[in-house]
Image 1 (cartoon, rainbow, N blue to C red):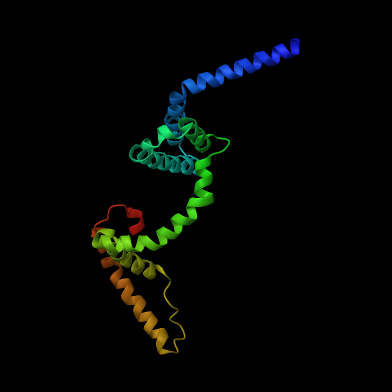
Image 2 (image 1 turned 180 degrees about the horizontal axis):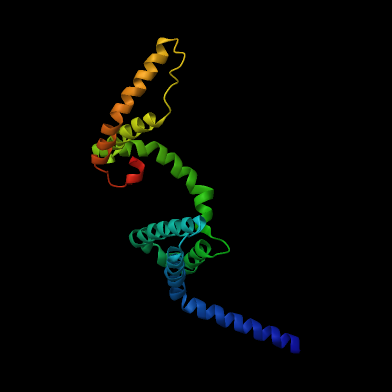
Length: 205
């Protein structure tokens, strides 16, 4: 009798907790969808060297969250009232995405989305740069690399002048001498060249 009483008491408490959760399911869903992910994202961003998996987890999560919010505001709000337990199912899905034991967003990226993104990126990125044209920065990057390459070539050791037997060796030596003469001009051109946005001066040198 005592055992049955304890079971009944525990069952009643579980039912009460479930009823309270369902009663406040809107607040629970809001906390799962926004509050907890926002807190975890802030903690990751405040770290000096955040883990790569953490960055991927929360970046992918916020992309999914914003996309779902737009879909819900424009389409799903018409069906929400006709889908049983819509808010409860939504809470469970977002809980799976953010829970540290599951990390559903991380799994979706590495398991499903990364391959699709790579294929689309390889196909569309060159077209995107082609549309940008001169704003892509590729031409200026090539122009800035030429003086640096010339300077690096001049730093290489000169060909050995002893025992010159072929015309090719004489040609190499002349090219090296010309390169040494042009090196200061190339260095000055590198210093005066404008730095395109997104490039560091260290890359020029």
